[in-house]
Length: 332
Image (tube, rainbow, N blue to C red; front, side, top):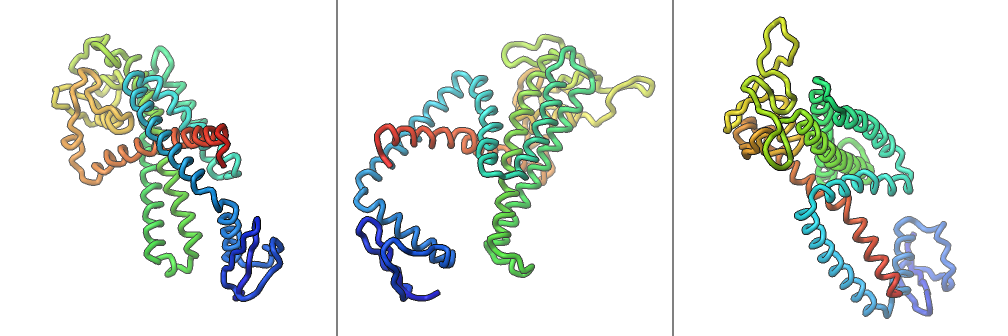
């Protein structure tokens, strides 16, 4: 369709150079192409907001001030009451996307969310039982490490698809750019979201299990003395005889000379975001622990997830607060 049409809204004419004319406010959108529909709606939006520049400037100012104040409040809350901050953030990370995806009928996300919630609820239930079963730490770390690897791989694949689409590689496979971009962005979202949520649940379970075993406490000295042949994360023996029941696995010695099962200490440091010794709280040198260059990006990936946590959990709340302020002040 080529030509000129005019759209009149509230007495304002908008000519978008398409070669034909319609009566004011009588444009039949059903007969227009998607590009022309967007142009008509864009023209109506400009006409509706014409002369409201001062109001828009006031709304932008409210947004900036609210973002700054909210950031200061969140930082102070995290520093002064980190436990309550982490719990509220975890709850919002779990619930906020559920609200929006249910409203938008995104059934694929709801299916994966339900599966994740059921399995994680079972694992968390096992982690909070007293006395702690000897197989529970292995179950917890295996589940969250598996989730961590899946989310990391999914995010990388999604990012790769997005980059390939930007460079036009999707055209080689005759895939539409919008389809390829939607697929890549969806994978990137899944990877980052479940990566954040899994890490937060893993940290909660790691704290609870270690304090239950008795070798770790969030503050103060450990409640038990650690013998040389006991892993402080899972509470099992480091070395076992052939006739004894136990865990056969490689061990790792930290710079503080405490020895742990390799799988336990890796899960403790990376999955549970604990960069200290589970027993004496000495800082762990992650670069020395993960000499393999393919494992080092996992640490940077964890920092990216920390940023995403704020974006998913708190940004919708802040935007909702801004909209509430604008509504109270009568701003549209």
